[in-house]
Image (cartoon, rainbow, N blue to C red; front, side, top):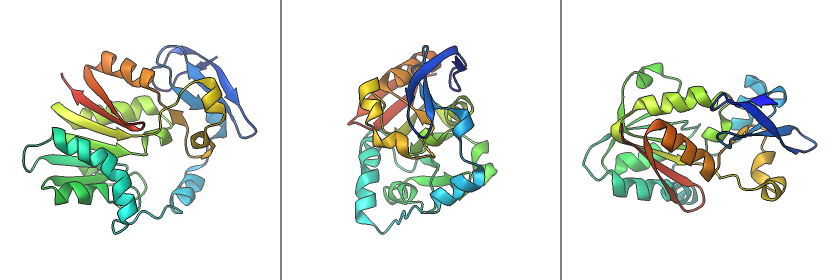
Length: 213
């Protein structure tokens, strides 16, 4: 039995085992998480991220991010709102796209844009694309994300959603050694109910949550 790093429920059973590491699934919030003993060091993790080639001039990358940007912009239709892209990576692009749409954007990334001052305010919307699967302490990071969103504001996420055990066993997404926390629709429904959020799923990997409290 493991303690869930998201909801702290002590009752996470072994879900899957492969040659790389063991995975557990929480019986309360359904988060699937990799064995903490198999985590990379911060130096190894940073080296892996340095391999990413995120370029704001890359139209393919912009198209990928537009899967979140387009539905979010439909919902934050007031002009010149204040937004934060959390986990922007080495080549901030989504923030540029949202700024081009007329919004004031800040960025934060623990490795590439670690300015704590941007975490001292609240925003009309916060985006976090392909980042929450990297959270080692998701209870802490989830709480931080929610604290950054104004009441009535939006949290826009992009992450691949875990399914059943058979699908997980064949899932390439788990093979990235920096991916340690795997959310499902069930997990987001749990968080929405617990934390006073409305949740919408857009396609297979975009989650929009509105803070109702």
